[in-house]
Image (tube, rainbow, N blue to C red):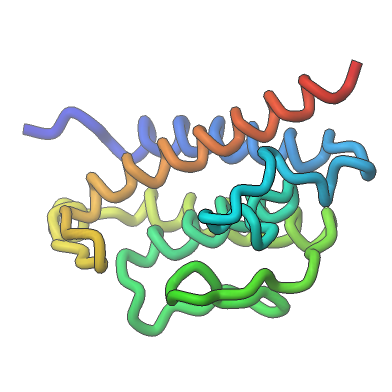
Length: 163
C-alpha cells in the first residue's frame, strides 16, 4: 500500500528547505558564529560544533548525504569538508552565508530530482549506516524531519536574540 507519493513528499521537503533558507538569510551577522548552547567540556559542543553557521552546514551536509542513501563515495561539493563521519573531527573553517545558501540551492535541486524520480524499487532499497539500516523512503522521512528540526531550532535561536 502506498500512502505517500512524490508530489506529497516534495511539498513537505520544499517547505522544510525553505524554512532553513529563511533562517540562514535572517541570521544577523553578529549571531553567525554564536553558539546555540553553552560549552560542555564532555561534549562535541565544546569544539564549536554548536555555532549557528555550523548547525546550518550540518543540516545541509546530512540532507545531501541522506539523499544519496549511502556514506560510501559521498563527498559534499567544494569548498565544503567531510565532517561528522569519523571520531575526532575538527571544526572546518567558518562558511559564509553565501556559501551555505549556495549549498542549500544544490541540495534543493538534488532533493527535488531524487524525489521526482523515486520509484517503488528505489523507495524500498535498503540503506545501511553505522547507526542502522532502513528503506530509502523511510530514510527520506527521517531526513525531512532532521531538516525541519534544525530549521526550527535556528529560527528559535534568532527569535531569542533579535528583538
